Length: 132
Image (cartoon, rainbow, N blue to C red; front, side, top):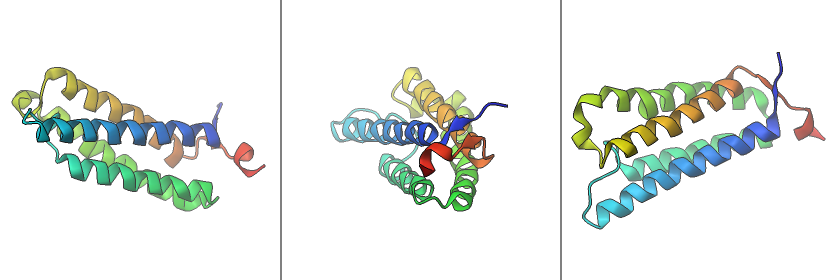
């Protein structure tokens, strides 16, 4: 089975964290402008959670890959539930979101993150380029 280079996986995870932060910042800005929230979750907590996730990635940069994999397994559970399942459970309550599009966007963003986190948690990466 082919694996992804760890440095490429980390870049993809950093992009995921950045996109997640920007989604929550946009929601917060719309809230402060008097518009509806983008999601049912608190945008400040969303930003903090994604920033913490970004810190988790630093464990791989410090070559502590066992801890990185454990944190990514935890991320699969936390972000998988809060980022995907909780939004899917709100399908019948789309009034909690600014639009159907931002509801679907939240699920799409976090689905990408879930795949990346699964790759990391399962160790399906090649760490050789990072260690050179």
